[in-house]
Structures are given as C-alpha cells and as structure tokens.
Length: 111
Figure (cartoon, rainbow, N blue to C red):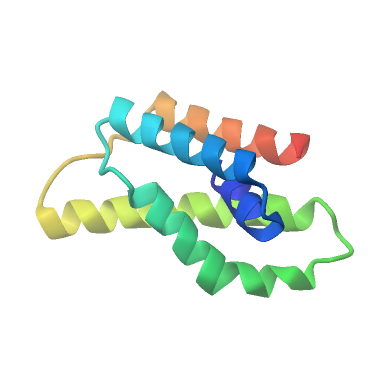
C-alpha cells in the first residue's frame, strides 16, 4: 500500500492516497504498531529514494517491485529503530507481517 500512496502522490490521484492512508492506519492500529510511522516512512521514501528509481523507465515491473521491497525494508528499519529508541517490543515478525508483504506485492502487480 505504500507504493499505492507513492503512485497517488505522483499522479495526483486522491482515491489512491485516501485508500492507502486508511489501510495503513488500520494496519497500524490493529497490530498495535506506532501510528503514522508507515506513512512517515513512505513519505521519506518518496522524497529521498524514489527519484532515483525513475531510471528504470524501460522495465515496467522493476520499479514497482523494487519500490515495494525498499519500502518494506525502510518500514521494518523504522520499526526496529523505534523499538530501540523507546525500549519497546512493538514488532513480532509473524505471519501477519508476511501477509502485508504479499498484499503489497499483489497490489504492485495489479497496478
């Protein structure tokens, strides 16, 4: 869904942005994760990393898949950093996080 937010921001499509933000907030609340951390991570990705992915213009599937993988790694890194700074245990690598990675990959293939 992070890639959907990036696409919504890039193309100016409000439904993409709204759907992605609602999904992300719902995911964070249901999994008791830090609220808005995934949105902040996605916006940081959009500003810092995503402009370098525009070099993959000819490969239509490379840029989205690479974006999703980097977004997920950035988010997991943000969660681990959050846990380290605040000395909490907010993340448990289980099937639900694997499910969200699979959903992200499917959304990229569908888009």
